[in-house]
Image (cartoon, rainbow over all chains, first blue to last red; front, side, top):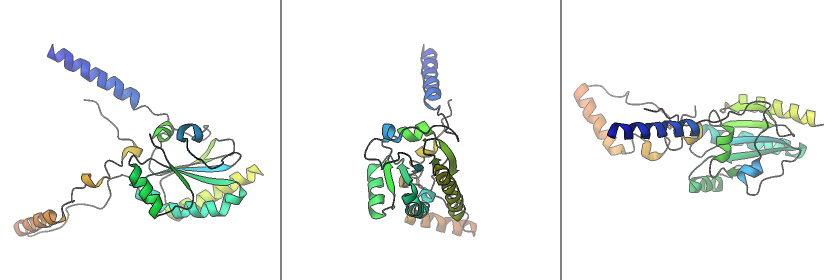
Length: 166
Length: 55
């Protein structure tokens, strides 16, 4: 009886674990999930714009190191139809609020309260940023942050996408 | 036993202060002193990193 109970518990645990741990990776060419549907809140206007969606967290040092680069990109390309949407995956709301209050990033950030978007996208590493074309499709994916190398690549890709727009 | 993979966005728990092995600096110093006295060697106790596995 006891062994049967243990078997049943393990079976349920395995099935639930298998089902819940499956995430569909987001690839180049895929339509990115709707930001307004998953995040809610006051989002910037992304209609007909090139969007850089960056997943970050306060506990992730390279994520925070990338912020000055995104700030520069936002400043340089915003007038041409580019917008940065940084999505925090922090589960501790106070950590998120404290960080963005003490260190204003210079671009739009929002917290993925239930980690619903990040689970849907299934980011491979932290940080990961997705560059979306104006039709909402993923055109480039950047895994991690590699200082000037990442900035050079992003600038090149944004310029390419903006040129396509015109 | 089932293997559970911690997803990249869940690493905040691992990076939490309470998961740090050296959150008692005085205790660590004392242990290092005992180790040095016994072995006549010091260091090699750990490497840098926050635990989030970001790099």
